Length: 153
Image (cartoon, rainbow, N blue to C red; front, side):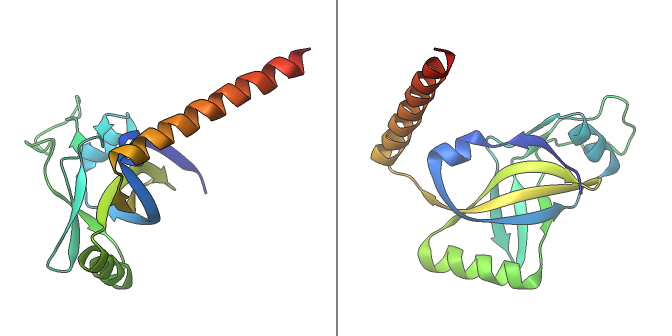
């Protein structure tokens, strides 16, 4: 069961607290799959929306495939449908409506030759939360540097 991560959204972990993650399939054309396989996908400004009991991803940029044909989509940031179970969609709908969660794509990967998208149920971070996260990362980096220096001695 090989998983090959193509792209991840590091900004999502900086801007949000990710409480729960879901794995979703994507409705794509063949040339989009080939382009994603080459790593020409960007999740930075993308977001997910619930509409009429379905989940869609907006602003995910998939560059056109160079050796593509007329099947290449005109718009690289077109809205794409996500494939989730009915129970997962109803759970997401409840959480987004009740508690003010957002749906944020965190990474796109291949799982057994199928393109999968990991979406996170996220709460927004305040400015002081972001600063705290940066301080913690920097402290961890310093500790790792000290430990690594002592191992050499």
